Length: 532
Ligand code: DCS
Image (cartoon, rainbow, N blue to C red; front, side):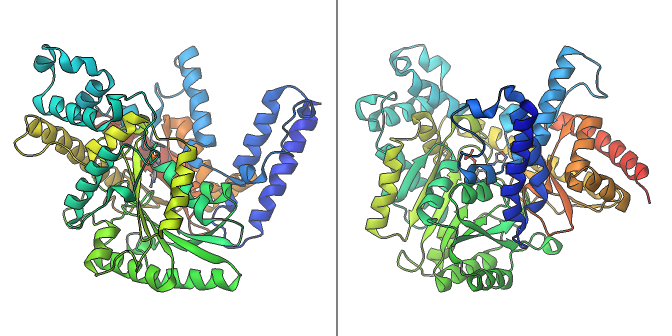
């Protein structure tokens, strides 16, 4: 009976994926074996006939089966198994710890939270501290003042109450002020929707834009798989545009045009263009001129510009600077009537890395009042985002200023984290480029490197024989030899026939030399084993 369930799961999932395989332009076809294996493993784990459950693999929403998220995919599940084995049987593997370089989760790898943000959060979470004299000895005066300001804008000072569905108005005012200072153009609290991280905001926009398979969203390839997953869950079509690896992951408008026309010729109505700047997994920072071309393209083609700007504080090169798309559009003289623009921001990234606090927002401009009312209605179905995340979002957009008691220590923490990230990015980039058959573009920004692997033909053949994409085969062997977890490029999409992996730059600086030497030793042995 159990075997029957496993076979059925395999058949069903490979059937579901066959339909995606029939799309020649899909950059995700190669990840299917992982899904089949995961579905089969899930079926095996049940130990009971699936027919005894009211929900079966046949009856669940096929869009769920189609959705994939490699950042926490099969390699990570394998790493967790190895970690358990290390605990129960120390010495059972050639390494003594698992290094999770698969996910942009800075505090899980030892990054400390920024003191000022946590001081304000603690005071808001336990406001009776504000009335105690000892508090003045323990907390900085500007953190206390900020906590009072925040308390004063929360109705009834009740941080345990639901807020307005867009988020506390006073916190949105503070965010709008922060955006205006950043861009030099005004921002409006009514345009801001506070969310539990940027992810729910992205889902909300996909829900708004996609009504059927014929609705397409132009997405960069490689992309962060939140986009492919969300488009799959909402039943739309991902229209890929390829970033040019040879020009440092350049975004070419000719490529946008070509893919838009190709999609239209297939009867797809392209509704929006996603741009991730700085890029994930690619790490490139767009030049201002390039951003202007993107704005012009969206305006001309009537596309909503979905600007993922969650890495706006993560820039590591002197010759590049973050410019929001809103600033670019406004500096071109374009207002609400010219461009529909959504900017996503998150407390999970930057130098703050507060992923678990689940804070973020989207700023939506250039939408009609009736459409905006619909967005509000959808937000209101979730009641509101969590209040600590809302407070944190207001803080990251309004950090301490010159003259505040915390200013100098805050700047020292911030610059310490950012300069260390820049050094880690450079050390890893140099290490990847020193490996035989590996080339790696600069991480100008964000938190990742995405090296290209030129694998020996023999390795490609062995990987294919075990029904695994070659980059996933490499990543698995890397994990088993070194304990380092990376994500195969096939989870992000890549030019067919090329192989990559994504590695975060987040392990603490004192661990980087050991990571590099383990990586080098593994790579040399791998290339030797499969040399033609
Ligand atoms: N957009 C981009 C480009 C991201 O990289 C992430 C998270 C998000 C949105 C959503 O983050 P939050 O919901 O936490 O705000 N990055 C994932 C990644 O690639 N590694 O870690 C998480």
